[in-house]
Image (cartoon, rainbow, N blue to C red; front, side, top):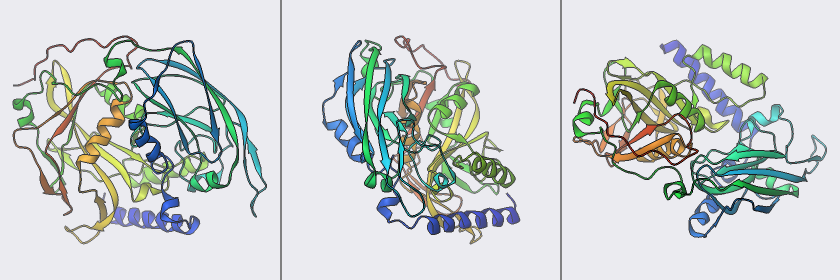
Length: 421
């Protein structure tokens, strides 16, 4: 991105931030995303409260009040469990000075222009629609349910039900939904199928110290200044990489400012949230990233988002490509120490982003194996190319990808070998 384009980009970013502040004068607590704030209690209690294993042929009934953001069903699904969710009932948003009272069912209200400045757990679903997620709020991807939905669990996890609304609506709405969850298939009966969140850590054949030593610990900017840490490795085909990120709620970012303007305009016209803001170009293996992915909250995308860059390495394991990832979490803005311009500030506790990538991908059911490995020359502290500091325990998470979520017991790991070792 040249200097003129950079100025235009940051001017647009600051305009977006100012617009958000002007149109949404709420407290810090109210600004918290429903998917990440009020669900924390539910997610924490799930770990402490024993659940009920979903049994085939049984139907479980839940009441979801209008004031609920999420409820913990305490229903634990095995991998490949199939459920049918049906819902009835009515919620009401009270009248305001600008609009009359609104009554709606589990399908929610049609999206409109105002929805573009709100943060809902499922950005493109109906306002007030019944939604669900499998697993903790920290990383599980919520999905739309509406009046009825058939769902197959990609991994084991706790089922949560929620309403696609913000904190303001939840505090003033009335009514309730009655939700029935019918278990059509209890899923796999293996011990591994009951492990929440994907496969347990285990050594991956072919991921050797010799291979890890060949992979640079850090990426660099165009001038060769060392920057972000390589903290994730994927073993899979190009198609598997793209599909796994998409399933985990990640979006491919725009490659240029012109793409940003076009995509943002189209998304706005379609009343969708814009989440694909481009990122700067960094280098590994003497070339720019092959992909950029982001996992962002609507409205906050300009200043805060989980994002990463992906490079296909020259190495393979058992003929399958090894992909290198540098993942960081933007948490605001700071001064770029190279040129005194404005740049994004990353969370210095960089291992949190590594685990976010690990968890969001593993819960898709598209991860066959995973492990945390420590390379021979582990990186524990450094600065980004822009001057921001970060620290790490030095480990890299390695994920072996599969084509589809398992509908039968996973095959035993095959012996593999690292190319060029």
